[in-house]
Length: 430
Ligand code: HEM
Image 1 (cartoon, rainbow, N blue to C red):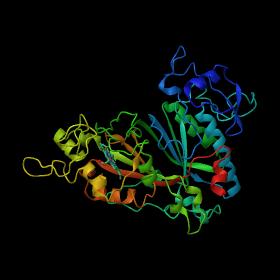
Image 2 (image 1 turned 180 degrees about the vertical axis):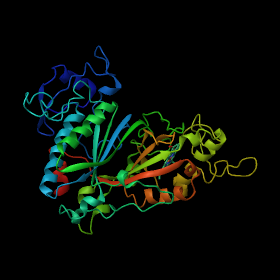
Image 3 (image 1 turned 45 degrees about the vertical axis):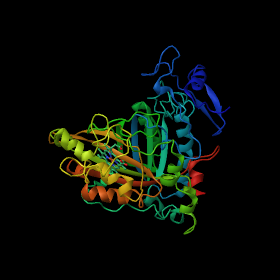
Image 4 (image 1 turned 90 degrees about the vertical axis):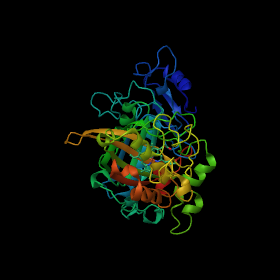
């Protein structure tokens, strides 16, 4: 039986009740369904809610990249703490099974919550037992340090998987940067995303340890033309000019690693063809300063109108910005040092990126300010040819720099999607 991939099909499976085991043909696994009825946000009376959806786990590319951005994020970077390559490989294989099960709305392991009996340690932590799949996606990535020779993977490091350079104005905290591995869990229910990360971390005890993690809310980008553009914590629409899932040719050009990109050299990096690089930047936003600036200053900083998201001096959110238009005094209507002017492909040799970030608020900074900002996530075909020149241009001149500070940074290579029967361990180690 093929795993159900939409809410209505899955609901039929769920109707059989918790603990129902069904064969998952794709993974050769059985999964025990979590019941949906008691889920907060789940519709009653059989109607489907936004949280009912199931995103297919397998395919040519990993889910969670061009998947219409869900509302919540739990991102975790981990370090490998064993020196045994087989232990790492086995964990990646076990993670594949658990991740696929959880994206179907199932427990991390069959009967994981209570099926092991009173004397067993539960193989699922249980907090998502009554919740639907909520469009959960689990996306894995590997940092440059994973290929340093500890696990015999040095020959498989893609050439472009090397640390990002320092940028002007960076204030990076090493405790919020880097990592051997990352897991990006996105869902329309925060508890579902946290449950996924928690259970994968639990399974990795003794093999991996959490280095840093980030919760995010309110996606700050649309990644599909089917989505309305959300707003970030500056109150501006974010994602208007983003790459979208529907732009297949542009994704091939700017997001997916081509086989030619990873051919040659050491010859062992072909595993990344069809994958993508994930750039993560934790960007603190000094919102108290922003909140005291005038609307005019804010709009000149972004280069767009706050209400509609239109380029300054123009109408319509999706109108192409006219960087030649002049204001009455003769200055460019869209300031040359505005964020969109600097980040626009016309001024960067055609470079584009797929943005998939989230807002965050992590309490206070202890000095009466919110520790808030944007957890910037971008997917690119080559971070050094795309993100680096773009961020250099922004770091040098962006008016927004007065209000933001980059406090964390990491780069990961995300492998392509898995075919039926494939798993992350075999995919990476060969
Ligand atoms: C807190 C940090 C940031 C905020 C609040 C922010 C906000 C925005 C906003 C409001 C827009 C205009 C709407 C849109 O087209 O999406 C935009 C556009 C854009 N941003 Fe950012 N951004 C931030 C950081 C970054 C960073 C670090 C990069 C990349 C290095 C970046 C790259 C872009 C790009 C490529 C565009 C589209 C430009 C165009 O083609 O018009 N942003 N951003």
